[in-house]
Image 1 (cartoon, rainbow, N blue to C red):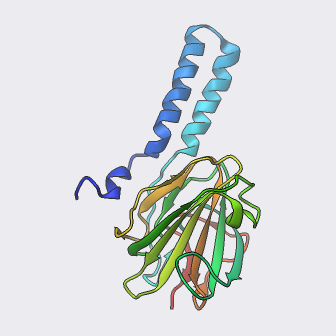
Image 2 (image 1 turned 90 degrees about the vertical axis):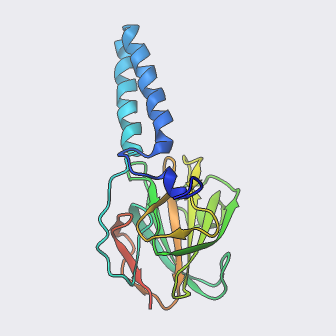
Image 3 (image 1 turned 135 degrees about the vertical axis):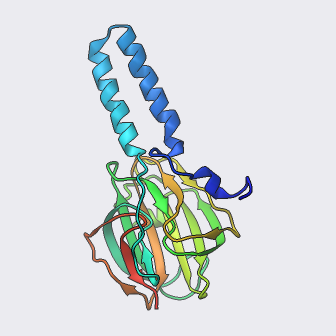
Amino acid sequence: MNHNDFRTKQNHIPIAREGIPYILMAMFVTLVAAILGHAFLTWPFLIATLLVGHFFRDPERILTADASHLVSPADGKVIAIEPVDSLRFVEGGRVKISIFMSVFNVHVNRIPYSGVVKGLHYQKGRFLNAGLSRASRENEQNWVWIRAQSGQDVVISQVAGLIARRIVCWPRQGDEVVRGERFGLIRFGSRLDVYVPSDAEVLVSKGDKVFAGESSLCRLI
């Protein structure tokens, strides 16, 4: 594995690496407050430190889905399943499956289907509540286009939310990616939109809770 491989940035530790500076900063502030004897500040800072650590947790996941299944790229709640006429990178109708991640969900994102990254696009935008349907169009987001060996195209959009201000995506165009492996994260509450072929058999319903790298979203035909 060469040093340019994005996987060198996502080797597993229980905490997402991008969260370590935030956790260390919170720990430092808590320690200073404790040393100075400010109990009324120490306890709130300690609770904040624990919450930040909880937000950036990165548990291992076990992939048991059928080989034809596209798995969820994010933890959260399915908030929309709807047809779309067109989108970036690919032509023709698609089905969009939207997953909302609250601040209490794991925010590390995982590859939904194995293939090659054919395209990436970063779109500047607003920071509306990620639960709104217009967030898919207007919010800051990062698009990832994956082409499977079968030739099927899957497009993912990491969408920033009301609090989220930082989208992280490690792969680059031309990288081979494997279903279930980590590829990035979004800090502090957001959503992921997954665009699949219109003939895919959707296996989830609106309101379902899903887990990145484990829950099947649809079966590609």
